Structure formats: structure tokens, C-alpha cells
Length: 112
Length: 113
Image 1: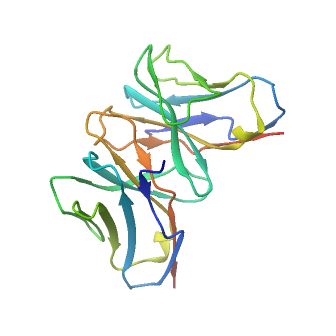
Image 2 (image 1 turned 90 degrees about the vertical axis):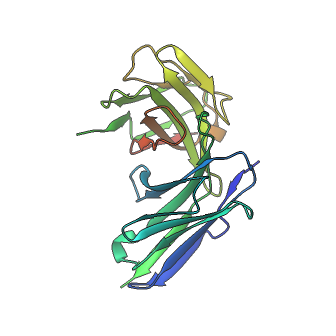
């Protein structure tokens, strides 16, 4: 039972354009969402997060949007750079519960 | 340098031969966790530990054991490995609450023949 879904296995964008990665979840009790980035042969690294009491969180080129009614979140990267090419995992959790649920990941390729 | 260290990075072994994957963190984190990554399934939690001598099952604990005798170490034990445990494994540590990001090791690729 995958409670967090990333339906696009891959995404390719041109350098300088916007990358939009999407994530859907089924458990309405989740109250914290995180995005991790993973390069080959390395572990995932934390990128950005958002609490369920917010609908937007921004950190430099990265913005995460949360639509609770649709149980959907998205990560926007503007402008995209070749170094952003990686697999991006969406994760969701309850504040007082360490059972973190991850999506299957989306492989982003940014072409120069 | 803050890090989570896993060993070995790669291991090919045979069915039934007990193995241990070690994990150590130098950030004094109370929370540690093990995940496995499989194609199309993302990262699934195997076991986690909130502190020394406190462990709990995650999403896919069958066939695995863990122990937390010291704060910095959280080994993953496969008592009798089977081919369906062939996977990429990650250890992670964190401050212990769901809103706190976890720090991951670089992974251990296990192949069980």
C-alpha cells in the first residue's frame, strides 16, 4: 500500500526552464512533507520541507506547494540547472511518528 | 564532518549465510533507521530506533533484525538471507521527530544468490 505516489518516473527539462515534480498522497493524517534529492552512488539528501499548516515554502530556487484538499504537493525548481539532474523523492510523515513514507522517485534530467 | 557511515558498500553472498551491515553516525542523533530501495517502490522503512535499546518495526521488517546497544551504531542483521532481500539499503539518522530531516548513508548494495 503506497501511501505516497510519484506518478512520473522521469522528467526532462531544458536548462533555465522550470522543473515541476509532483507527488500525491492518500493518508490525510500526514502533517509533514519533505523532498530529498539523490545522486547516483550516494544517499538521499534533504532538500526542502513543508508543514501541513502551510501551502508554500520557498528556499532559493526551490519551492514546494501543498494542496491539502487534493492531497497533492509539487516541487518547483526555477531556473533548472544541469547540476539538478538527480532522482527526487517525496516523503510524508506524521509529526510524532517516525514511520516516514517515501514515493518511488522521479528522475530529473536537466539538459544544457 | 557530519556523516552516516555504512559498511560494506557492496556485498554478494549466498542464501542462508548470516550477514551484518553496520551503520554508524557521528552527529549524536537519537533516531536511526534502515530503509531498502527497490525499483518502482522507492524507499521502504525496515526498522527504526528512537534511542538506545529502543527499536520498532517499520513497513517491511520480515527477515531482518536490528540492535541499538550504543547511540552511534545501528547494525542491520540478516540471519538467513534470501534472494528477495537483494536490494539497496540505506541507513539514516536524525533528531527524532517526523518533521526533522534525516541524514542518509551512501547505501549498501546487497546481492543474495
